[in-house]
Amino acid sequence: MAAVRWISLVSIGLNIAFVAAGVLVVARRGGWAYLQARWHRKTNPEMTIYQSPYYRQRQSQLEKLTVSTDDILFLGDSITDEGEWSDWFSAVTIRNRGISGDTTSGVLRRLPGLLKTPPQAIFLMIGINDLIVLGRSPDQVLSHYQQILTLIQQSAPQTQVYVQSVLPVSDAAFPGINPKILQLNQGIAALAEALGYRYVNLHPLFVVDGEIDGACTADGVHLNGEGYARWVDYLRPLIAAGVAQ
Amino acid sequence: MAAVRWISLVSIGLNIAFVAAGVLVVARRGGWAYLQARWHRKTNPEMTIYQSPYYRQRQSQLEKLTVSTDDILFLGDSITDEGEWSDWFSAVTIRNRGISGDTTSGVLRRLPGLLKTPPQAIFLMIGINDLIVLGRSPDQVLSHYQQILTLIQQSAPQTQVYVQSVLPVSDAAFPGINPKILQLNQGIAALAEALGYRYVNLHPLFVVDGEIDGACTADGVHLNGEGYARWVDYLRPLIAAGVAQ
Image (cartoon, rainbow over all chains, first blue to last red; front, side, top):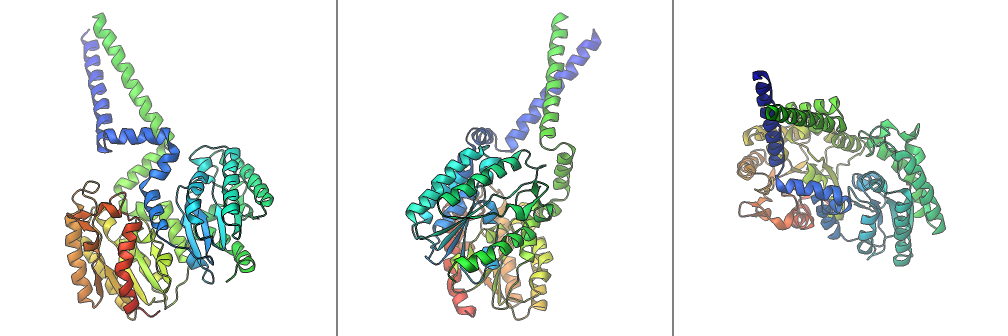
């Protein structure tokens, strides 16, 4: 029986060590506040995006910047946010209105502010975070697209809108997302046509075997220099033809 | 003895459950590759910065962009990266050459590429990640500053350099860092003067009770719209006076 007692002592010691290690990890990450934040992130993924320090800081900066009616807005999420648009296009004034993490609902919230001075044109690319982060269906995302495009048409009827397709992602990093992107893009194209806006189909420039070309990305969703160069090369004639310089 | 046996069974069961939960968490985060990445991050914090997908993607984009000798480079880390400089300054051409996460060593690595076409001016702000992420001492950071400024002076003697102070941070989020920032800034000011460059002391614009003014930040280190507005207001006369438009 000494063996059983000895085993149970070691085992209980291990129990205490495991629990202590767990408490320590949680304590080092911020204790109770950390657990609350984790829970909030799980139960309110959408508000977590808008309440993140980055989103709030970026939005408050963008709200301080003014726009003229000659400007072109690039509106979207991180893929827009991370582009050095004023470097890529020197002949026209591009205003970067991307916010990393943004979704179709975030764009809908920001639109009234952005349309106070209607810009000459808007290049819109949004929706990948709806699919990846919020787990929305293509149909849910499309109903937001409908609201976004209708709101622009009502508030800024003179503004040209270029509705860009959502880009493919890496299958390994984001399993199951590429088929949803195809479905979403079909709907986006149809909505753009119905509202008389130009659909800009970038997806074929980036796709290889149904997923994003590895030459364009390091993490399977965001773009590197080669990715931005492909995008910009495709937009250049559109901007030259359609937008006053 | 039945009680002892019963307790030891429960205890062993709990241990198996703890281990299984640990294995599951690791497996969900990427298994062996995740553990290797964690270890790499701990043992090579500096290479982890440069090898992050964001850093590589951003650097490869910046390498595709060209600069003219009339341009002004804003060079630094996330605090520079996140600024919409071309919106804030419309009369001059500002090129954003900030990369989130960058350090004095990263700037030193990037400088030869950035100086191929020497710009009219460089506004430099770097060093907070050296202190916070890499745990470097102010003296170590200053030896990198010495190398950065000397390299610019040798490779681009016509380029004006505005050496900006490191901004204060929040004491709660980054305990023990603010005293190091003060020490670093003293050294930066002395180095700038020794090399004949202008020291731009932004620190007083942002400091309240020894730490960053809460009105300028959401996370205690990065800036919101109010933060960028203060910075830009301070730079405007400097740029108007010192830089050809």
